[in-house]
Image (cartoon, rainbow, N blue to C red; front, side):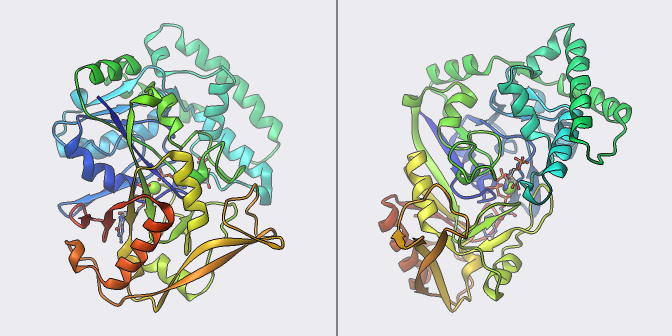
Length: 423
Ligand code: GDP
Ligand code: IMO
Ligand code: MG
């Protein structure tokens, strides 16, 4: 039985949460494969908006199992908060939420180290969500990390103490002003660990293997976006995990030849939170309009998202790196009312015109070259059939499909589960 994979093709916040929730009816298991509470995945249905950070976006469907994979980093404190927010929905979390023993834990001192590292970088800061993601993955690859499975062993607190002491020494080394009360943070952390331990810990790679043997349908859920990938993103302004398709193999223990569909999600324009290059970024009225109509504020940090036109050069790159088989275009409704819609189809790179993503896309090397499309006036938020979409939007969609050579199967016209058009 094959596994399908869903991931973001830009700098995150493409609308992955909405689409995973929408697709869950077709799957038995939703498995998150990387990232941690830096993610903010928004779902809306029945007039309620939910934001998930670590818990997979299939959690609200009655028959789905939601798995937090080995590639994910878990902050028990934030996880507990997510569970508290779900309490009123009467979900049987003990049965439907399972956690890989091999997932790594974010300690309070990882968060402090993140803050110290960013403060020490000054103007060169990454714009991290400060959730401790970088330091936790550093401890993972440095072979010092504490994993969920360690919580079942009597020695884990000793391991914790020695790692937290080391972190404190490292925080001092940064020589920046980071205020904290570790006793308070630890009390909160150990309380949250107790709650985490009330859930099922599993050997998730074996679980997923058996699920495949038993013909279960699995959807792997990505976090962040392809341009934030540690290898293929706009390094160093990236996150610390592989957000691209390969991350689903390492983050779940799924073999590459078991992956069938790769669903690539992109906004009809582009956004980015935090620092780093963004060739099509707008600083004019058009950019402000996207931010306002699209309500572009980070679901995790509340920071305003930077906005700009669709970057087809970057999108093509993401489609290639991930082997995308189906595209999903989000937030088409936000472009209603623009006189002209632009798409970056090439870069002016030094003195050349190029159509691939070069090593550096900093603005001193790269200027976007645009193709313009006629806009449409019609409000799309109540449209439910492809035939009712304006001709100008269909021209835009067909142009993108032709350039990317991948079909756009879903067009999203609003945040609600029902505002989803299948093609
Ligand atoms: P994720 O991180 O990829 O899951 O995306 P986020 O939840 O961080 O950001 C997407 C935002 O856009 C959320 O506020 C969604 O509710 C909202 N959203 C998703 N799809 C649409 C859409 O088609 N139209 C509009 N207007 N909003 C959408
Ligand atoms: P979802 O899953 C958008 C960005 C941060 C920062 C950089 C590194 O909701 O799409 P980190 O905290 O990982 O050290 O931050 O990555 N970033 C995101 N941007 N959506 C996300 O997740 C993000 N997760 C991290 O803003 O620029
Ligand atoms: Mg998000």
